[in-house]
Length: 178
Image (cartoon, rainbow, N blue to C red; front, top):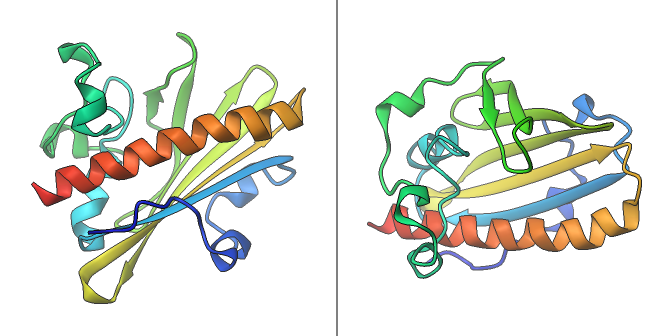
């Protein structure tokens, strides 16, 4: 079974990632990473279909039981949701105007989203690295600038981000084990 930690190594935090240049002056940066017991090519489709009004956020069953049935995440790959291109807009949580735009799409390794929320610009990079033994290291980097309350964003937002990614990692592990 893959590790339940979503803490990146120091090296993972230090390495430049695709999309870092989208928000070059980021004042808040959040890095998360986890390992999945599946090859990168098996993991990639799950991230392509990720998101609101798409396949969802892949929470584990124990958490999804608390979510109304119509809002639960998919537990399979949907071929219709595999059509994703640079420039596509994906709805996000946080209001009717909250969206992500696909900025970089390099199958099966890199997916970068960008968004503007009020005066805040952000990028969200997902990088998949194939490891020996058919496992995959998933690295997620959220970069934001023009944050009014940077400390609150880093601490409070960091906690929400951590909780979201812990759920995502657990939910993906369940789906890949099925």
